[in-house]
Length: 307
Image (cartoon, rainbow, N blue to C red):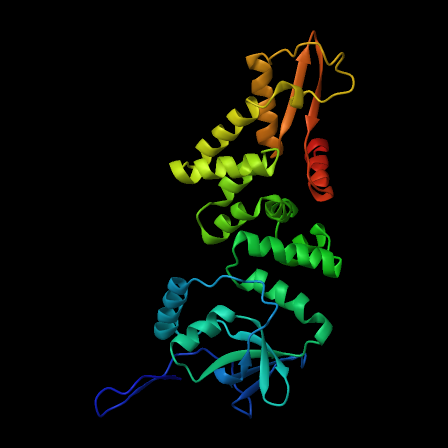
């Protein structure tokens, strides 16, 4: 139920059409067959936000839009909570809906109460929010990293649990190698995932920040950003691109890549999603593929062997 402020000498209330499962003998509680879940209506004031909520940014405009949707259609998906004390509940998933209901001055919310032990709260919260909430790419990537580092998940297990391709999870986690300003732009929506992936091919933070500044100033689309990154990599000092102990005397002048060889280098960088350095001279040379973590190495290994 939603309370509306009094106008003049009258007041009114608006009842939200909240879908509920079939109610048993007790109309306020419905237990599932396993006994580990219950459906209830819980006063909003009794719901405590999860301090380890993976979502860190809540757009006011998006919350207003969600509140309007709830006003007209009701809460289509109950919040997920667990009992906390005698009368309070800790929010596991659904903070956006909880905040939208507060904007509507709602009295209560439909919830699913789950019996979750303390040590599993964060794990369940992360999985629930990844599946149910519209997390930003960075929030989702951080959630994956937390599940991997704290709970020993592998990318393969996460992929099976979430119904996603392993490459999708690996590519999202690679976004955490971006500099903080680029990650912030991705969270705020100033940059897209396509822009971010293009910047990942750059060799260091200085290059990322320089191209980011130009990208935002000129409003490049993803294709133009990729082109600018390729141009930047082409202009790197040849000595840095031929860091090979078998390349011969350091005093020997470098030979600029022929156009067809440079095209191969660019194509390899695009396909592998990382920086590639190809050197060629007198019919021999070397190929260097950069990676920044063991997970990225595993991704490149799988891509190269075709598994």
